[in-house]
Amino acid sequence: MKLSEGIFAVKLYELEQQYGRMQSRLRLCQKEDHSKIRQELQKATDEYKENELLLERNVEGSRSPAVAALAGAQLKYYKTVREILEQELPDYLRSEKNTTAEDKAEAAALYGEYAIDFAIQSTRYALIAALKAIDLQMSVDEQKEEFPNE
Image 1 (cartoon, rainbow, N blue to C red):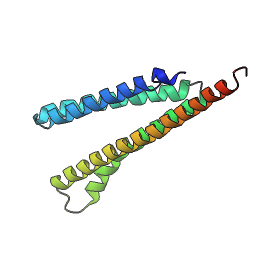
Image 2 (spheres, one colour; image 1 turned 135 degrees about the vertical axis):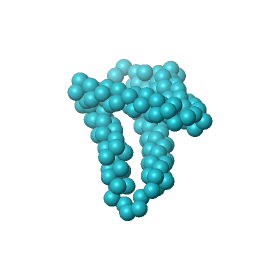
Image 3 (cartoon, helix red, strand yellow; image 1 turned 120 degrees about the vertical axis):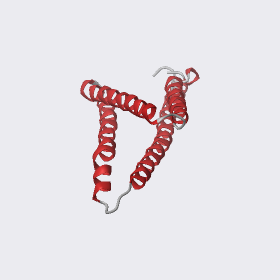
Image 4 (spheres, rainbow, N blue to C red; image 1 turned 45 degrees about the vertical axis):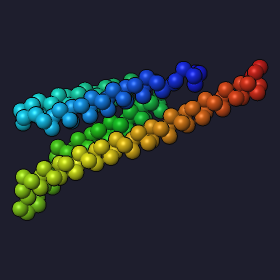
C-alpha cells in the first residue's frame, strides 16, 4: 500500500459526495411544499433502511472479526437512533403536559441538530483512524527501508 496512491481517496470522495447531496437536499427542501418534504423524507428513510440491511450483511458475512465488529457497532447505533426518533421521542412528547405542535417541531429540530453534531464527531474519529493507519503504514515502510531483506 503506497501512501502516494491516496489510500483514503475513494472514501473521501464518497464522503464529499454524500455531504453535497445532504446539503443540496436540505437547501432545496426548505423551499418546497409539504408533500415534497414528505416524499424526500420517505426517500431518505428508504436509503437509510437499505444501508442498514447492507450493514447487517456485513456483520453476518464478514471474514474479518474487526470489520464485523465495526459494522455491528454501526448497526447498533442505527437501530438505537431510529428507536429514539420513531418511538421514544414521540412517547416522550406525548407524556409531556400541554405539548404543542410547536414543542414537537422544536424537539425534532434538536434531534436533527444532534444527529449533525454526531456526524461531525464521526468525521473527527474517522480522521484519527485514518491517521493511525497512515502512521502504521509509514512505520512498516520505514522498517522495510531499514531492513530490506526481512
